[in-house]
Length: 168
Image 1 (cartoon, rainbow, N blue to C red):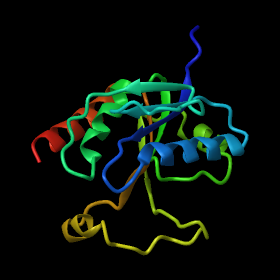
Image 2 (image 1 turned 60 degrees about the vertical axis):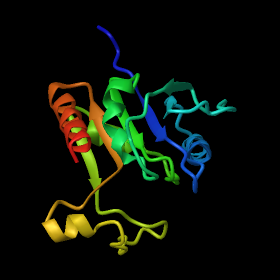
Image 3 (image 1 turned 135 degrees about the vertical axis):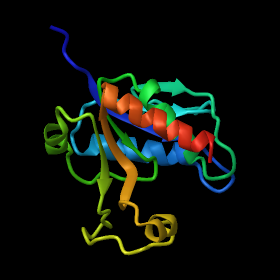
């Protein structure tokens, strides 16, 4: 029986203000600092230059427009080389091992984080980027940490995200 692979993917697309590839390097180092040996894959649309901290780099064709490049998130499902994946946004730092999260998520098609916390472990209170969620009564999800397994449901989810971004 084939053993399922698991690993982290980090989508990093620089803009005029932020070097998200550099942020992804810091994230990968923070994962390693917790003792986690799972592979970390960088997904990007430009040559990342020095990328030794990553186990692999996957080049993507960007379809996003504007400075805030969230419109490419839907590509993560197809570009992840793993059967079980944690997608972590590049501007996140991991401060403790995620082993228990891997166990909690096992067997679930897709999970998106809710209830973000700051580095003091206090609930995040900033609503600056949450006005669309608040005004429409939507679930307060944070796609900065998303788990998915290769499954029909996860594929449908990411296809729906693609449709939303392409027909915004």
